[in-house]
Image (cartoon, rainbow, N blue to C red; front, side, top):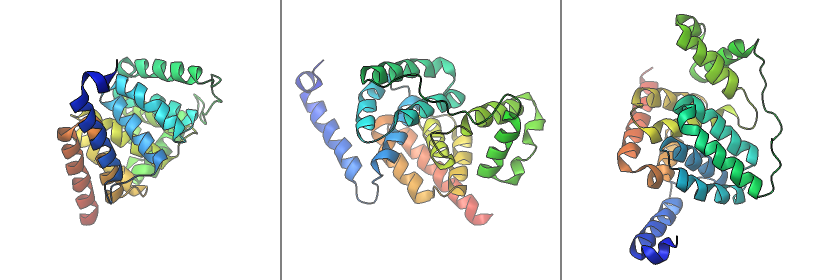
Length: 231
């Protein structure tokens, strides 16, 4: 439907605000980074229709199909396949319509035999030596190391800084995950995604996830930054 014709006043203000956010002094992000953050946030808040609108723009801004796929794959661990499968379908439909040959080249770097070991190492690389052996605390901790980190964080296509940033966006956008959001804000900072960077990420995602979740995310960023100062 023609939104500009059916909702002209809303469209005018929404389009103007999106442009205002993009160009806010001190809150800008490179096009690729912004695209990753927005797509991850739309997954997190279940904004499928907006995701379909944002994906072509992200591809035109230079985001590679493999990067898009990796965002969607990694979302499964933070949102569940029940919420992610419609987005995977949408990505495949849009990529095929644009002439992208699927499947894309494989990005796995682990096997079923070493996924736990390499997943644990990814946890250590992000959160520190305190994660060494954490998988032994129970079967869910083991799954977290082997599946979340071993199956996904170790893949190619995105580096650890990108992956921690999109995880931050998944958590911020779905809400109700503030303890995990604070922990991953700290993980981002450990990798060099500092407080100012995460603030810019939240700012660019705000039109897509709303003010309450954005304000909560900013509070978690401040909490993580304060904990680093006091450690």
